[in-house]
Image 1 (cartoon, one colour):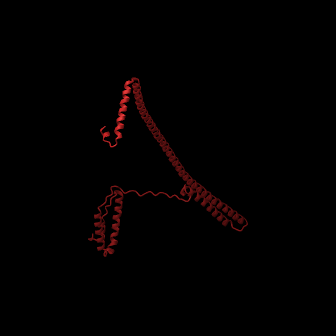
Image 2 (image 1 turned 120 degrees about the vertical axis):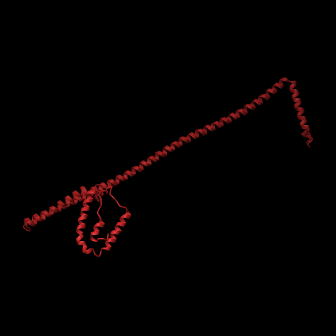
Image 3 (image 1 turned 180 degrees about the vertical axis):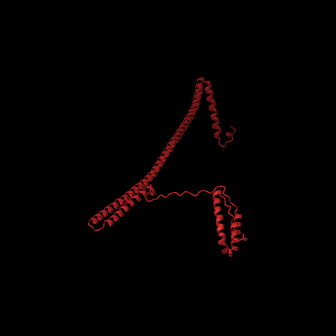
Length: 279
């Protein structure tokens, strides 16, 4: 009331006071009439109860709507999962089908290539057989001509026999060569390819073959080379008397190598026979 009395408008305190007086009068009248008071209280309780009920009902409806939305979202997510599985299965099926088609195309290409090779081989074989038959036919015609000419005494029997034998040798030689070349040397896959025999590799050396160090071999060969250079001037006069001895020693060493597999030939001793004192 202090705030109302401090207002600058003089009618506001009067209005507030009138409202308070009206409330007091209304309360006084309700107390005088218990029936109206009970009806007013019941009315207020019903109004408050209805308000609370409407509020709860609105909250329940909102919760129901939200739950329905959540259920729809869950159903949609489940539908998306099923659709993703279907798409994944469809993708795998398409990929497998494409792989089968690609493999079938590859096999068809290989079969077509092989069929072409087979057709080419048999065509060339028939052409070569036709060539041999043509050669045989031409040779037969020539043979008939030779026989008819010989019967008319235009050729001697010796020359006719030689020509006939030559024709027979040519025809038989071509036929035999074709047969053995086709059966043996010709490749069974490609007509224009020839097969060659396999050459066995050389045998491996024995595992216990002795080998001197590289440095010692170099020194040894350098000494021999130096000795040969020192006695080059006097070698011609002594070579004839010592070569036979060196040859005999080398033959014995070869026999020893074949027996033992070791090289024990004394090159310095052999060279000292030619040039004494230089090795």
